[in-house]
Amino acid sequence: MEEKPLVNSEGYSREDWQRHYETGDLRWDIGEASPPFVRLWDERKLQPGNAVIPGCGRGHEAVFFAERGFNVTAVDIAPGAALCLRQALKEKRLPVNVVLGDFFEIGPAHDNRYDVMFEQTFFCAIAPSHRDRYVETAFRILKPRGVLAALFYETGEPGGPPFNTSREDVLRHFPIRFDIERLEKTPHSVERRKGKEWLGILRRK
Image 1 (cartoon, rainbow, N blue to C red):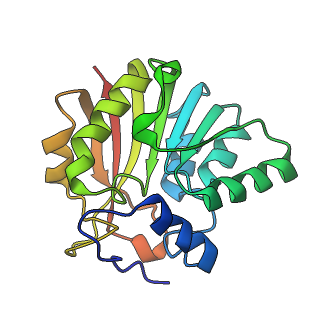
Image 2: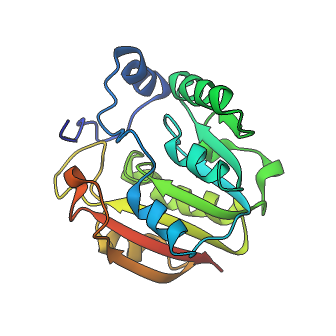
């Protein structure tokens, strides 16, 4: 299904996201871990450690990296997302910590805890007015010099979610807290996202 913006300039509430799980309208879900992340793993660009995934959805990345030795914490605001992931984890017998709640409000137990944060369809899902808050939360929970491995989604369209994320948007929000080591259009996206994903490797200052 083509990923047209859902058109809500202020972002979605918990109830809005939950409604998508209840109706089965998961147009953003590609059914697998994002190929650019798989490629990073295959190229040995990532090392197992404590990982966090905000807005994890059905948790394909959580499962993929847990199977490869990462100690994963997956966060989502929608009960439907947490339920889907917990069912998958039960079937695979994987020890992922699933946190049902608002990523921006996760407590101090998470501060300076993570070696890597995986960003995939969360930054584009939140209202653009929350982007600086995203950067500050990522900075708070990553260890010094921890890595934000990100796929930023450039829709090229107004409205959202998903909200358009350009290279300029990344450069506007992140450099105060992160060193941008890599930011390029990835050739490894699934077909419907070809030419729309910026692969970023950002390191916490």
